[in-house]
Image (cartoon, rainbow, N blue to C red; front, side, top):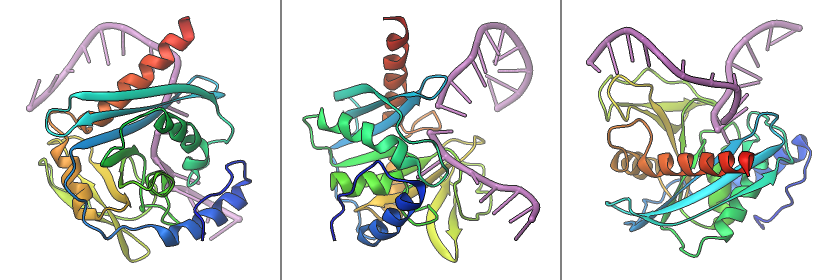
Length: 225
DNA sequence: GCGACAG
DNA sequence: ATCTTGTCGC
């Protein structure tokens, strides 16, 4: 079965596509050693008619910027909980097309398999890019969990319908935890390990912060000039 | 039928 | 996501 499909779908069609694509997701393979890491993020204007997408690629360990690309595009799909990728993925894929480097792994702003149909934006992007991806969200979409301990590194399983779909991970002491889940070609332990390895004093992984700042930079300059 | 609901 | 500065606390 092909993972190719159009993006201009109705919500019902989009859900059907997700249900089928989920069968191709690999959330059990350990992540191979990585030397380059990419992070993707999206930002919006007030009305939500235009979206800005950006991807940054950094070097492991040093987080030195290797490459980055960003763009503005019309939002062709509304925000519907559970269908985020149909709104943001097209623009992000365009940004990836403008990157020369093929990163070893990609950090995505949103869920991986911690999704009602197991196909959050990280998993969806992983399939389309055929790259390892990790879902790193700031809040929960589905699943139940116990509040993790207050120290950095403390975690608790995120369980949905009896299945462990991710981890609620404290990346900074006493600060709201992150919701980490495998996107594609990566297992949960690898995902949690990478998020901790790329997080320092702030809640978000360094590359994710870089992508966030960059995409907002693009949005700001789009307003003025 | 009543909540919940990534960004 | 976005509207928004300073301020409180570790």
